[in-house]
Amino acid sequence: MRTGAINELQELRRKIYLTAKSEKLKRFWGLFCHVVKMDTLDKAYKLAKQNNGSAGIDGVTFQEIERNGVYSFIKGIREELINGTYLPTRNRKVEIPKSNGKTRTLGIATIKDRVVQGALKLILEPIFEADFSECSYGFRPNRNQHQAVNRVAKGMVRGFTKVIDVDLTAYFDNINHGILMDKMSLRINDPKIMRLIKLMLKTNGRVGVPQGSVISPLFSNIYLSEIDRMFERAKRETARRGCENMEYCRFADDTVILVNGHETVAWLVNKAYKRLKEELTKLKISLNVEKTKIVDMNQREIFGFLGFDFRLVKNKAKKMVLLKPKKKKVAELISKVKVHLLQNKDKTVTEMIKGLNSILRGWVNYYRIGHCTRTLTFIKLWVERKVRRFARKAQKKFGFGWKEWSSEVIYDKWGLYNDYQVRYYNK
Image (cartoon, rainbow, N blue to C red; front, top):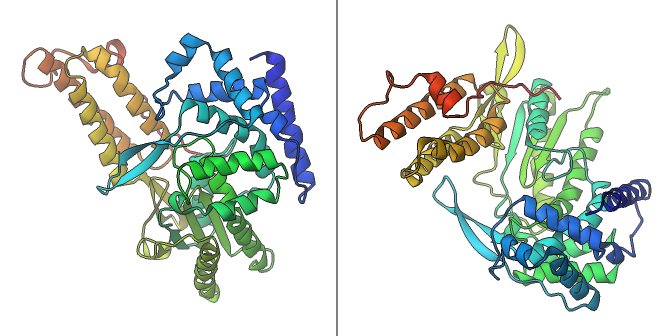
């Protein structure tokens, strides 16, 4: 992709965003011509390749596309879109095991469909980004889980100690296509774009959007955006003397509502819960009443959000939030390391460590923001013992090789991941 083309696409997205931001009721038309530009499709292909996903139901891989020529592949997609002959292919379904013994179904789209979804997202995202609320963090540009976790922790320190820990029942599987299309039509006045969206939605069923697809996160944020705005209004309307009495944070379908713990606003907890349930009913989304719970942090209760356990404590008369990885997340990492060691038992220790480092680096970088020094130290020592045992088994010997290999050999020579330092999040 030409440097000039990259700049042109960036400038187009910027202009679309600024227009949408300044004209809240504007319905955009003439978008389809931007979606089918070679430069847009080329950028979408590159983004899809960066994720290095597996093939869809058609079996076509990136390697096969590269052999046959990327340009001809993209040009073929463009011609189908312009001629109106493009039809999405149903997703290849993959069952991902969850820690509770159940599975989560991911929909793996074909690479062709990923490119089309990516191109559509590149053009539509700036429009809806202009409408999204500050309290929404899931799968948005320049936003991440750490920011969401930090927002919740700060809210607790401010005194919002009554927490509604929200759980939605199979959210992605129950998104209503008609409601979603109506919401999108408030901003999109392009029949070709709306037809393309409808085709994407209907390909994989009458209801729901597949988890794992390129454009599903955008759809899911659009679907819940009115609830975000409702709670932002509630924050303003329930404020007293310039002081807010509640906080709200959402990352995809993971939602937390925090309310001032003072007894004078105790009514606000039930009111917030009731309003949430009412709005979800309008969207035909169910609240999982068994898993949704109201937690009082002043009673030393704990709740989980985005893989972290939150606990409010007092330290020298000052409130602070203890933030630690959930125990099941530590257990998942240990299980993943064990599986990796078993699957690579025929490789050399340095070859095995390359894959192991990727597992460790991703997990530690995510969880290192909290009060997890003990947890990280435990993981480091446990992993080192497992690597030592792996090396000794390769020699057909018992033990851990404490006398044979120093820690410097394991970390410096063999290259085992060694950055377990906590980094506090200050933004």
